[in-house]
Amino acid sequence: MQSFYLLPKRALFVALSLGLLAGCIRHKYETPIAKNTQQPDKVLFDQAMHDIERGHYEVARISLQTLMNTYESSEYLAKAKLAIADSWYREGGANGLAQAEAEYKDFELFYPNMEEAAQAQNRVCEIHYKQMDKSDRDDIQALRAETECRQLLVQFPNSKFAPEAAQRLRNIQESLAEHEFVVGDFYWRRDMNPAAANRLNALVDQYPLFSKAGEALYEAGDSYSKMGARFRPKAGDMFARIVREYPLSDRAEDAKSRLQDLEMPIPQVDQAAYDREKYEIENYKHPSLLARSTSWLHGGPDVSHAAKEGQPTMTDPKRTIPASVPLANTEVASNAGGGTGTTDVSATTVGANDTALEKNADARNGGTAQAGAQTATQNQPLPTNRDAELQKYREKQAKKQAKLQKKKKKKEQQAAEHQDQKQSLVAPGATNGQAPPQQQ
Image 1 (spheres, helix red, strand yellow):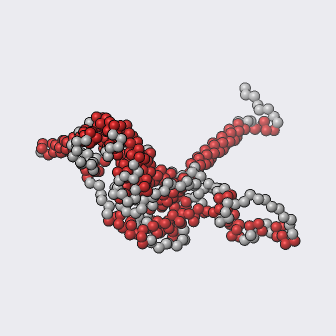
Image 2 (spheres, helix red, strand yellow):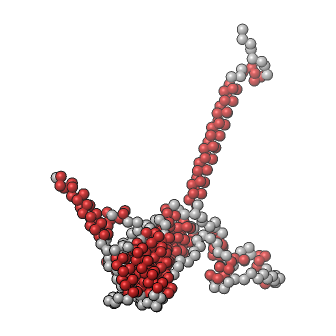
Image 3 (cartoon, helix red, strand yellow):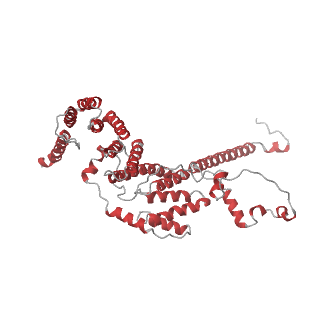
């Protein structure tokens, strides 16, 4: 029985010992130059590689800097500059990684056509990827990592690092999308409908490979449906997109039900989207027990649900405006196909055929009930993010007012009862103009 309780402690001790042993093992520095010569620049280079493998980074950088300053035409010049960046990368720490990024960028600037330039850009991407924080925290490192990985795919699309960078980019965008979803879900749960709809709709447009895209679209559609009749088409678009592009999501059946309630047609499923979702479900790997139990030790985000295929987004997010914000006249004209609009003003005299303006009050709206209903819908107040709070405030004020009215009515009743009691104490003779009799 005692050995049973000691087993977890022994296992933990063994795991820590293996971790320390792995940290002490020095990895050999890979270099494509392996000539066995005794030239001075080669001797300096070999000595620097020997120091890097043993963790003597400062000594190695001194040797490499001496090589670069002394032998300007050496064939080891580019390798030495890359090795300086690698020494900072291996040294680690905030200062070391910052120095490594600067050195890698310098290497790309001086040697853009070398094969190692892709390796340098890949290391820059790794620097920010390893410093990413959890999705619900600061996302500055995730944004930097996204930019650097995109740069690698754009500048070196055929390099051997491109497939790894593409998957890393999917992981980064999964974390960024989760960050946006947390904010949008916060707004949705508190009935801040314009902010929630704008945030969640833009999220899916920017990151369509997000694992919770169906949930985000459903919350966006639900937010639009609470914003009034004029936003009913937008709510239908959100629900229809779930059925069409995310048919295997948990919200697909709910979206069909909402479309039926809105009396809108249910769209056909996109076969390519169906195949992609099916592939993701079949190739999903659950995190191991060890990974789940030690997740609190890692500062990075959980990207186990990130997409395994599909083209990651290669453009920056667009500026979005909530649907509750009125558009400018130029934007309305542009959306209607009228170009950039016009500010010209013209005036004409009323002719004999224009007497409908005098006879029919609805002539300006076309004289139809449909135009009147549309105008009434457009004249409705636009929703705000504080509608729920304002409603609670109005209800609270109404209850307070009702309580005051009840209290005032009670005081009036008490005053009337007091007046009746006072009158009942008056003698009967006083009512005829006679003084009450005096007591003996």
